[in-house]
Length: 401
Picture 1 (cartoon, rainbow, N blue to C red):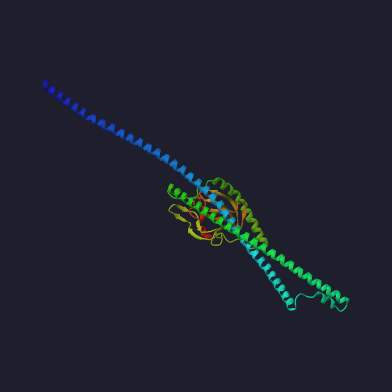
Picture 2: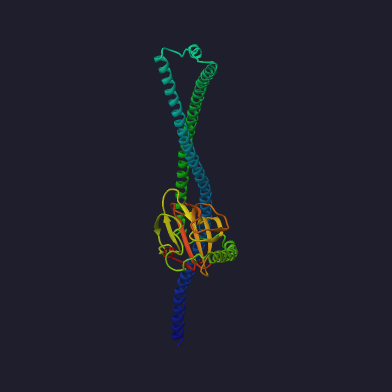
C-alpha cells in the first residue's frame, strides 16, 4: 500500500517535473516573439517617421524648385521683352537707313544734274573761245533800253551761276551729312544686333536651366501634374469671376442692342465650329483626352518663334496672373447667345491685358514656356459655364472653332 502510494507520488512528481520542464521553453518562446514584434513595431515606426521626414523634405524641395522656376520665368519674360524691344530698335534703324538711302539718292541726282549742266556750260564757253566778253555784249546794244536789258540779263546769268554753285555746295554738304548718318545708323545696327544675339543666348541659358529644374520636379512627382493645375488663387479667381460674368453679360447686352439698332447679324450659335477662333497658330500637340497622368482638360498648341495669342471670342477678363503651375495665365468670361463660357490661356510668355473687355481676335499675349511647362506651347481650355477648380464643365475646344 505504502509502496503503491509512494509509486503514485513518484509518478505525479515526475509528471509535474516534466510539465515544469516543458513549460519553461514555451514561456521563453512567447517572450522572444513579443520582443521581436515590439522591435518590428519600433522599426516600422522609425521607418514611418523617416518617410514623413522625407516627404516633408520632398515637399520643401518641390517648393524650392517651384520658386526657382518662377524666378527663371520672370527673368526670361524680362529678357524676352528686351529682345522684342531690341528687335523693334533694329527694325526702326533699318527703316531709318532705308529712308536715308532714298534721300541720298535724291540729293545725288540733283548734284549729278548740276554737274552735267555746269560741264555743258564750260564746254560751250570753251567752244566759243573762252569766257563771254561782257564788254562786247554791253557795247553791242542798239539803244539805251537794249543796253539796260543786256546788263540785267548778264546780272541774272551771273546770279544764277552763283546760286547754282551755292546749291551744289549745300547739296554736297548735305550728302556728306547723310552718309555720316548712315554710317552712325549702321554702327548702331551692328551693336544692336550683337546685343540681340547676347540676349538670345541669355534666354536660351535661362530656358535650359528651367528645363533642368522641370526634370528634377518631374522626378520628385510620381507624374508631371502641370495640366491638373493646382490653383493657388482659386478663391480670388472665383470672386473675380462673379464680377466679370456680370460685366460680360452687360457688355453682351450692349453689343446685341447695337447690332439690332444697326441691323447687324447676331453672334453664331453656341455649338459647332465657328463659335470661337483658334487662339494661336501652330500644331495641336496634345488634345482633350484622358492621359497617363490624368485628364487633360484642354488642348496644347505649339509653335516656335514669337507667336501671338488672341482672344477666342469677345469677352471680359476674369483674371490675368502668374501661377506656379500655369505660369502666365489669363481667364476670360464670354456670354454667347444666353450661355456663359470661360476660356483659359496658360504658359504664356507675357500677358498684354490685365482686365477689362477684349474683342474676338485681339492680341492678349505671346506663346511661352512659363510655369510647369516643358517647351513653348499654349495650353488652352474651354468651359461651358463659369470656371471651377474641378473643371467639371470643361469641353473639347477644338470642336468649337
